Length: 312
Length: 284
Image 1: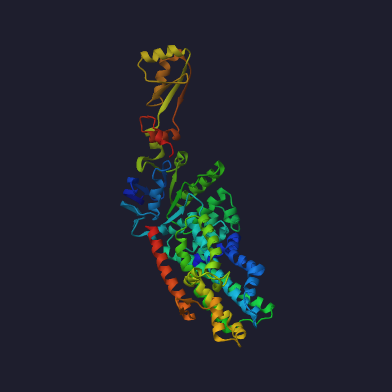
Image 2: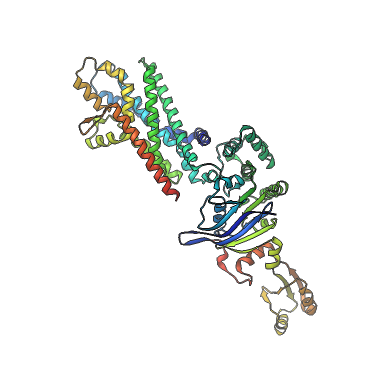
């Protein structure tokens, strides 16, 4: 597979603030790529550069072999964008909105008509065409936004936090739409999110923090690399069990009356349970969720608490 | 550019409150004239033939001048809103030239200003007709349309510069209200220039819109003036023309139609250049 987006040693600063520091990554054609990070991590800046909306200070960005900053107009034909906010005109109907935006691309009347019908069918908004965009629900608006991004049949669909502010049901629906699109059309989908569960569907994940890439890999790789399994034990006699563990030089933590022991592999639990069988009242082996992985990545692998991970 | 002009026109006419507000200054003006300003001005003048026709023509010339500015201004609301809501991002990320986006804003504001002014011109004719006065001749009609075009283009360039400083819709709305209100004074439309103190007179003669108003007056009042001053002295007629702002006197120099046309044209060119510079600086 070829690389449809290549970012090499990208830098961007606003005055004294470095928003993006030496960022490099690539996206394979036809893949679903997630760009993960909290607010202020530098995601939006990177995306704005990819979209040719912002000039970068240093580095090289290529979209489908076209150089950002040199061949911007050609790049704009290759990318379809779903912005974080809904940007279509609320006073115009869906049909009028799509017609207006379709005119931004080189299409004749027939092609435009076909493009609108095709995009509308893809995201299932054909029944909304006569309604005013401003009167639609959040989920409906989002679907229209995606239809707008698909008008010119772009090679790359870029979605900036597409599900932020939607209820769970709509979020799921939008996700199904995106996944179907990627599967059926083999379109490259690039999305940013701060929900790790959403990144789980993707082929590759890049995690950004404070303008730098701090982790990348497939969701499974990230999970394998960063997840920590734990054995949680409640003892029959709390004090006795504590003494026993200390005597055995076992590393543990005491969490509200339960003992937590970190494991390299889940199977290590078997030996421990056998060893302390007589002392254990109940136990549980916990595998970390993607959420834990995300927090783990952000805090550094050793798990030290780091408060500035919180959203600024 | 036409894509954007079409979109902006659609948005302007569909936003009923924006449409109303861009006509608010005109509505206020009509109400003021109807309730007391009209009588006030009439009482301040001696009786002469065709007085009502003359004043009606004077009033509509002023309304046309105000309309050509406020509707153009209102049309730029779309641009301010696009910036405030980030709606422009979608256009910036599309394969079009930014200049065609800005061209679209200017174009739609000119088209809107032109057609709204034309509407006022038709209403003026209907009012003349209902009052039993003569309507405009075809030639005058063509002349008025020419002045409307020039006036709208000049307004558009001035407003373009002004709008480049507004980032929020509220600031723009506030500015629109202030401009709509002040315009009537600054162009000698509420009260004839001759009744105002000297320093205000100077401001009025320099304010571009006053020159649109003067040009409209010269055309609309042509026949009633001829009738009213048929038997009067040249100096009495001259004094009246200056008092009512049909022509202006700047430092002893008497303005002509050509002077006003050139003044408006120069304003349009200078402000377009300033606006272009302001926009360029904003971008980088």
